[in-house]
Amino acid sequence: MRIAEELGVEANIVLYLKQPPDAATLRAILDKLEDPPTQLVRRDSTFAKLGLGEDDVQTREQIVALLVERKALLQRPLVVTPTKAIVGRPKERVRDLLAALGR
Image (tube, rainbow, N blue to C red; front, side, top):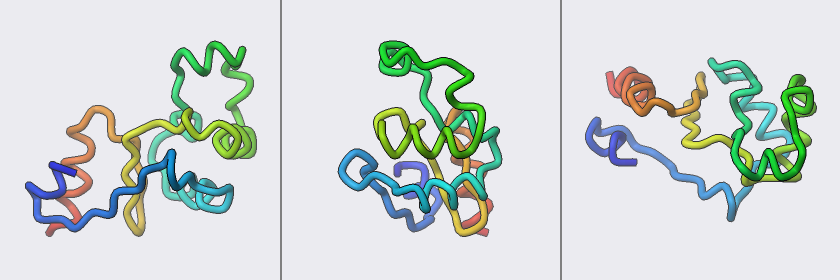
């Protein structure tokens, strides 16, 4: 949010745990995603505790099904514009994408 404010770009922050994306929204994000689709899934302790591995997040439908069921595994920050979506790590990627919007 801070980067958007600095660049004068209007941003809509979605609190994904309170308003998780549904399957259709996740598919739309994947359609715009510049990163490999599997990057949309966090590989954290929850991922490991669930016994998940790379074979569980290889296809778009596996990714969508997992994130609908386990919203906390959604990688963040995630920046979605009308035409592109990126995982905002490192944060310079967010700056570059939003700066292009502000032009």
